[in-house]
Structures are given as C-alpha cells and as structure tokens.
Length: 90
Image (tube, rainbow, N blue to C red):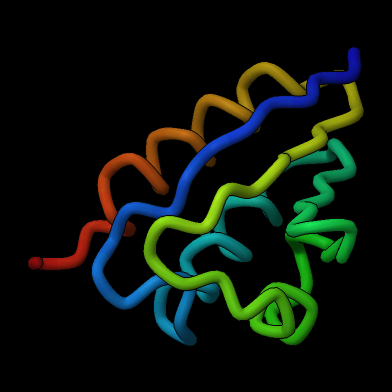
C-alpha cells in the first residue's frame, strides 16, 4: 500500500535534532519505505542526517510518502508524533 499525505510542522523549534531523532526512531520501527519531501527535497525518514538537511522550521509543510505493507500504521504513528509536537513542552 502506498500513501502520500501532507502535514505541517507545528512545534516551536521545528524539526531540530531531538525531534528528528524521535521521527527516525518512529519510522525505523516499520518495514515501509518512508520519504519526506520539502519543496522537492527528499529525505529518508530513517536517516537522521537526511531529515536534518530538510531544515524544516515551524510552519513548514511536508509531504510524507509511505510505501509498504504497514504503511497505514506507519503514517498514523508519524502523524501522531508530529501533531503532538514531538512530545516537547512548548
């Protein structure tokens, strides 16, 4: 199954090192390939360096493409993590 959805980074500090680490940890639990796109720049969601290179600040819209047998579950976990501001106090 392949899903492609958009989501906005809402936490104050954006996709900084700690948030990127949490995203990579979440993505790595799934078999699916997970690609995050920001204005044409693609990043493997299982690579912290790739994610940090996106330099996604608060308000940045990202397109997340999840492809694999567990795509729906992977998307839900990533969406929850981002919408919960990476569990950071604001």
